[in-house]
Image (cartoon, rainbow, N blue to C red; front, side, top):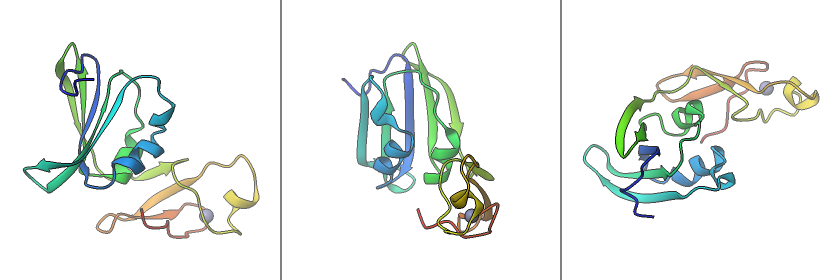
Length: 140
Ligand SMILES: [Zn+2]
């Protein structure tokens, strides 16, 4: 694939350098049939280095996952070879079924079928806590 020639698809730009693989796994991009390109350590005007993911298909992306892993990322939706829409992300206030609580006594661990909900407790540090037991999420 010529990575600059996506006709219809999604480019996740300005990913924090080193985070592309984590994002790839959390977005489950390995399950896609289309072409996915990961560019690591690309030169960035703003932050020195950045990662980029290009997806050659118009799929739905869980923006909360992207915002959680890399709050400074930008999502570009490509239609007919041009950027149709650009979204800037920020840390989501709530994470639903994105990360799991590590507390063995938490209700989400002891009972089945309960959503994993984390709330942003410290926007400065990007810290999240379990909505049920207040356990701090592990570092990304
Ligand atoms: Zn918990």
